[in-house]
Image 1 (cartoon, helix red, strand yellow):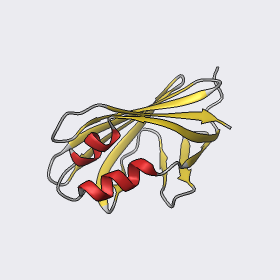
Image 2: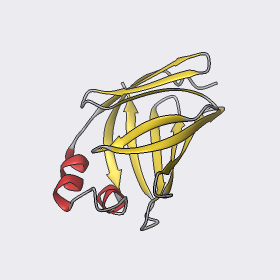
Image 3: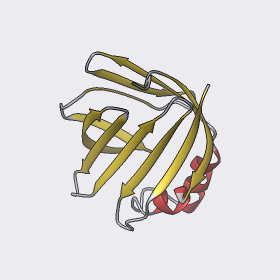
Image 4: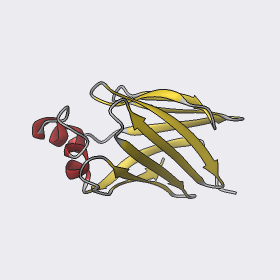
Length: 133
């Protein structure tokens, strides 16, 4: 089984600016480009059914699998989310107060982490590829 806990450094983005802009009016073009240019290191910790996702650029999220939690995704956008773990795939499904839906799927391997983002008003699918460090 793939080890999920660890540190991961962002290597590349695909369609991330378009995805961010599709989240809603809260994300300006300039903010989307600024976020896209960041090269965060993501630390993933697993303790039983509890998972923490912490970056070196100030974002963090801790939750229990299968239980709804409040999640701040970007620039103050708060959503209610539920996370599930199936093997090496962590899936987080989110709903905003105005009924926007989104999914973040984290696929872990021995060498990398690929996060696929979908949902939002534009239905753009984006990917971020991280190397395990």
